[in-house]
Amino acid sequence: MNGPVWGYFVYYRLAPGPVPEEAWAEIFAVVAGRTGVQGRLYGPAPDGCTWMEVYEPVPETERGVFEAALRTAVERSGLEGWLAAEEHRHVEAFPRADSGA
View 1 (cartoon, rainbow, N blue to C red):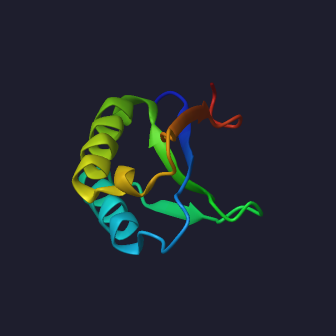
View 2: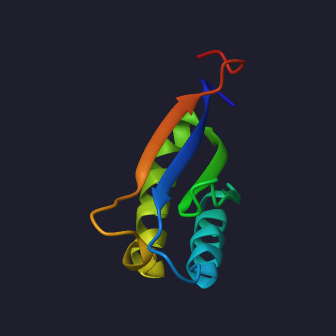
């Protein structure tokens, strides 16, 4: 890989109730199918409603493709309808410290 390798961390709070297992499965399948990057899910946090998706490694040269695939997957999945009131998905990207960033 040329350039740094990135990790994407996406966190958000869900509304109380059941969790959107099918939405997560669809997001991970679409992103992996288009980019080869397999997402992982963490949560809920101790507050019971905060979840995090982690995607890595994303090569520097593939960031645009990855970000477009993730946006499309989330829109198609309907996950945003499960978010708590006035909540949105927070997307943070960091270069891996050992990847030459």
